[in-house]
Length: 91
Image (cartoon, rainbow, N blue to C red; front, side, top):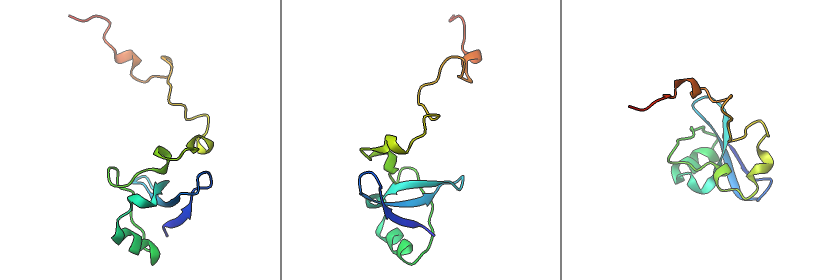
């Protein structure tokens, strides 16, 4: 069942939806359509749709509280999977 709640950090209304990989993602309730809100109110599930729904991580003022340190956006050269595919010379 979709989870209607509010953010523990900023108190904005959110809903947890499932991604195509079956992982839960917090979504701004304001980005959910009226039909989807009706579905949620009766316990019907609907998936997260990239481009339609807005991840709450993108708008929450305190989203860093919920991110683990292992998910750093910076990648070193030794961690980059594409480093061996970069051309060494340009013709």
